[in-house]
Amino acid sequence: MSTYVALLYSIVLGGGKRVVMADLRGMAEDLGYRNCRTLVSTGNLVFETDRLPIGDIEQALETAFEKRFGKHVDIIARTGADWLKLADGNPFPAREGSEVGVRVMRAPLDEGVLNLLERHRGEEKIAIVAGDLWVDFGGKASETRLLSAMTTVKLGIGTIRNANTVAGLAEMIG
Image (cartoon, rainbow, N blue to C red; front, side):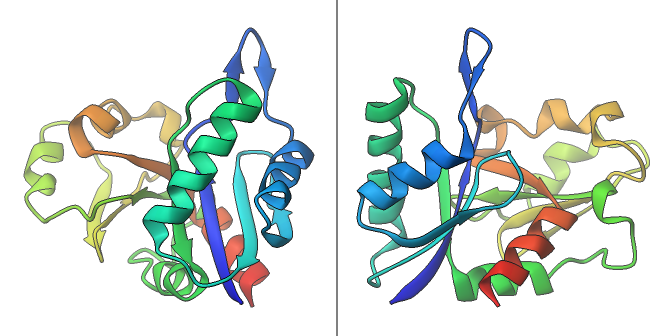
């Protein structure tokens, strides 16, 4: 058995409806995943299953999600070991966890992305660590222009989590 983390890009289904985490856990259990648990109500899932390629897990989760909830949502998965490396790789560990975020990417970003983001950056500090984009927003992420450049169209499939969530998921893994 291996431990995995899966992150939903969005839990908004439209029409004011959101995915309930108990339903997300149920969906994962229906796929045969075990010890399914969630952290906060933003689509963070930890589970165990036989060792499988990450792409297979992402595809299975996305297909099951669309079938169950009627909407496609990108889902990014990592092995537990890779998640622990991501958590340990936070380049801004001394900063407030709610003000530091990481865009966890399906395909690794290269350093050239930093040039693309530079013109949108204010006082934020940015770094790419192992293909994921870390940002020290220096305040509320919602108050920065940088978010408008951190889209799927510009960067590829990925989703943002703050450092507190990253650490919480790492604690769940153990």
